[in-house]
Amino acid sequence: MTTRRSILKFSGVAAATGLAGCATATGINPLIPPVAKVVQSPDQVRPTAATMGAAPASHFEARQKPTYVAQTNDPLGHSRADNLFWNDIMMEHAMFFVQLMPGPELAGPRRQAEEFQRLFTQQLERSRDIRADNMVAFNQSSIDLARRFSDYKKTMREQQASGKIRSLVWPLFFTHTAREADRFAARLALYNRRQIEFDRREVVTFWGATMGEHSAFIAHLLDPDEKLLIEQANRLERTFRQTGPRDVPGDDIMKAANEVLDFKTVGEKGIYEGKIKSIISPPLASHVRREAVRFIDELKRTQAG
Ligand SMILES: [Fe+2]
Image 1 (cartoon, rainbow, N blue to C red):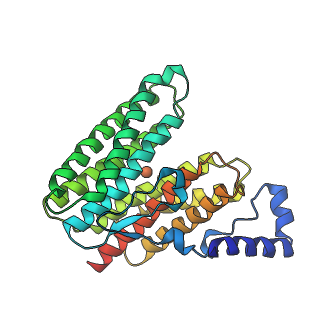
Image 2 (cartoon, rainbow, N blue to C red):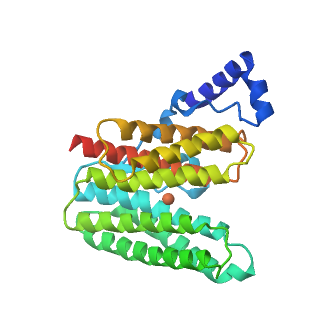
Image 3 (cartoon, rainbow, N blue to C red):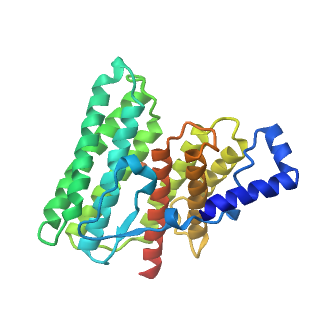
């Protein structure tokens, strides 16, 4: 509600100051304020503690999906949260591939993606019941599944890049989603060795690359008329690319993380309400926003530690 109010308020200000006319002439969307001025919507930016029996949200209600984070700072708490969060993310990757592989020529890879979607839906459902006595085995089953999916993504990347398949999935989207699968598996392997610490440099490197690439994807999926949003997305991409693998001091990275979350939160709402022109689906908008929530949670944990 807060974000919606701020969008509407900004729209009113823009109209009153004559900016809206200028914006229309140049194709800039007047409904979206500069990211720094956005007030976050609490229901979209708040993480949810993962508990025993936590419900994996239906993907028909993508916008209401919680972003699970560890309730207790121990291997069990992190295992529950990561399985509830990442198995859902992996399921959505498979769903996006299915959507982006049309026609009879792509029936083979599409069928494989459908199978991964089914398997991760099942794994997500089972993630509700992770207990101390089944944690290691459950984590291992997720690791095996994530590694298989990562192999598929890497193979598809080569095929798409070399023109052997002609899907609508960019090679970088395969690379990006394979990195997420590898990271998911790597974290679970740590929990099985009873290691839970987040390494700040690793968190910044992984999520910085992820946020930068999200910004680039968003810029390419917006309608070419959405010039202001495309500029904002490009600026965010540059910010995260410059951040790179450096061990960023102070609050710089947290500020950038909050900016990208603001941008995605407003973007998701605008897409859902039909106020932004794009080919971004609401589940994709929710997906990238939830990953930003997760980034901020992990960043806070590295600061607390
Ligand atoms: Fe993702």
